[in-house]
Image 1 (spheres, helix red, strand yellow):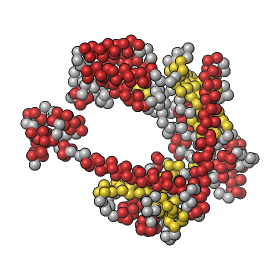
Image 2 (spheres, one colour; image 1 turned 90 degrees about the vertical axis):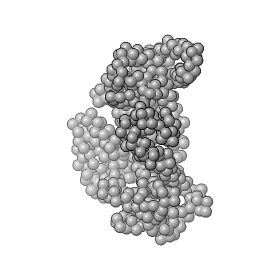
Image 3 (cartoon, helix red, strand yellow; image 1 turned 45 degrees about the vertical axis):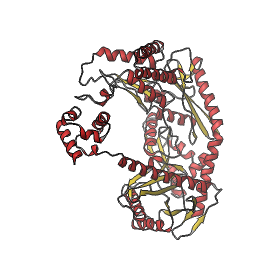
Image 4 (cartoon, rainbow, N blue to C red; image 1 turned 45 degrees about the horizontal axis):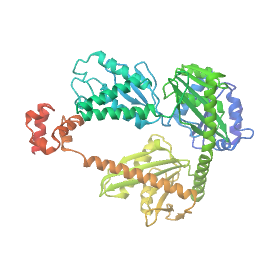
Length: 587
């Protein structure tokens, strides 16, 4: 859009609440924001002086759209939904960050025990946590299920499953288990996970000693490992004990050097569990970005009884939208915890700023170097690599880099139909990728890098020409030296563009090449491994994974199964399946 058209469009924005969307030259939404007054907010981007990061955002804005809403609350909700849908690169997005695990116990007649992430609390389950170590959570649940066999199946069946035979379930699908059994198990579990576990531990210790005295050493070992798991997860975790047995969340932020650092503490039964700190460049108003984060966070995490935020945060929209009690911290204990959050956010920003800023600067410099070297934009790069063994299990991997960072949700893996022909494999995967992007009107890359020299480049060139994309996508080949290491870039004319091996762009190319190669090899090994472990039992109709495990657990080998009688096999599988199995084995 030229300056005159942009000026006219800015002039005609109404003075009303709503959401605005900034777009780049490709029409891709790169930033979404909300405003009480759309006219004033959007115009502010194009007038006056800005810091470096906002200036960078504005330099990439080619056009914008806006949506008028009835209120600022509606604008907030719409803003969050648009960010979730379009993932604008300049918006702070915390949704995809890893979350702490919870232990979940359902409120059913026959309860189920499991680990949960990114969940929302509901009336049909109890959630305990969050806990800082996912491996410890898995380990604890594993041992709890051996001692307290809650139901594991999602649906009740009409026959006993493998879990029952392994001693991990009481079999309520077949047997009449008294309700008191599950009620008592649930009470014990709640005592343990709520921290009042002294009685529980003593009970487990006594059971361990009794099992040992009865020479049931396997059971005694299970009790011992359960105690160790409890100590590892609950007793020895780093936490701060507070006087009040609260069940609240506390969040605050600190801004400096164009970055925002957000810290949160989650209090459960009076214990403060330190949450992961989030640090990101700041392109908008700090308070708005903080509220934006809170909205995203509770879209995928259980809500507390009460949320406490700094005193300068407008809580009206938060409380109404999240449907929980939200308070500002003015004095007393709440203010002390918020001050702790701010102090920790400040320290984390100071600790991480230089590392992150240096990394961002080096990556941006690498993109600039590649763009100058190739005389083409290199903001979005796609790379392909193939892998096979003597023409078998032929696969291809695609990795995507946006602004120098891997965009892993855009990665793709392909099973290829072509075999023992690298050139045809290259043609197949490139055709499948870009034909689909054209069909679905997906985002095309600025550049395509293929792993190889002129032969691979010509194969890709043929496909891009047939799709009419050769003028839109810069095609390059990643050239390697005799040691199969990254050496440079080759263009479609066969000219090798040498790159300084000490430059940022060289290291970026090396990381890209390693990533796409690693993905291809891993996928190939996975398919090959599956084929190697395939059993003749997989070919028998009526034998699934559970029956397969039961047969192998009892008979140890295929040869022993072959020696079994029809009557013996029908103890595990139906007679028709047993006859079919013996027929196939005897063949």
